[in-house]
Image (tube, rainbow, N blue to C red; front, side, top):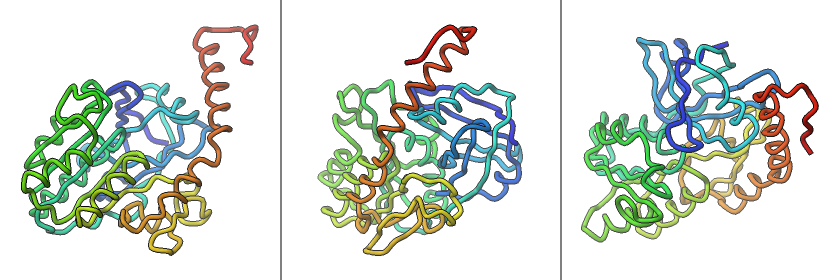
Length: 288
């Protein structure tokens, strides 16, 4: 069990979680993830490791409240304990490529920080871009600016930076004469698919960090299998970093949608149950 040091909502539905985990903090590398179990009845949640401090013995993660287990995690309190396991997965492929474009969206805005730091430390010129539906959904900007040579923003409503997505920022920079040796994308599956396809059209090699359904997270159950370059890979032990141009995106979407109906029903039921519990309901209230 590991103690929660910080748990706060950064922007709506996106939370920053800092956990006391000295053994994990000493071993973390950019691109790895951890598994969190909010309580004894929760699922195992794979979350990208966003930062770590070996001296303080802490690990930082960002997560999106989207299902039952992340809803339960968001309602835990500082000082309470959760099950926490890591670091897991293969570290990112870090080397001196030259000029690198790094794009993050949603929870990926927080998750790209270790990649940005590591690539900068390896001698790369780092251009970082983040996206959100509006300016108030952009976060972690100060840290990303600190470790990037250039920092760019995109918003769907045009309220800050480029109107559009990370891939539109990439287009703009290429049109302005920027030459990128490689690109890294971190965020929801749709964002990574569209961004990697655009990078391929621009002849820019790219890496993505896949987020399939995962249970065991140590390579034994096979639930997180993905198809990359015609071969079956397990995201938990072969990834999560893969060549975005080689991922079978339609298959990944199909597998990720398997339990949507069940997840939606479970989310609504548990949200109702948690509401009654918080309100001190004696059991008379019913969740239909």
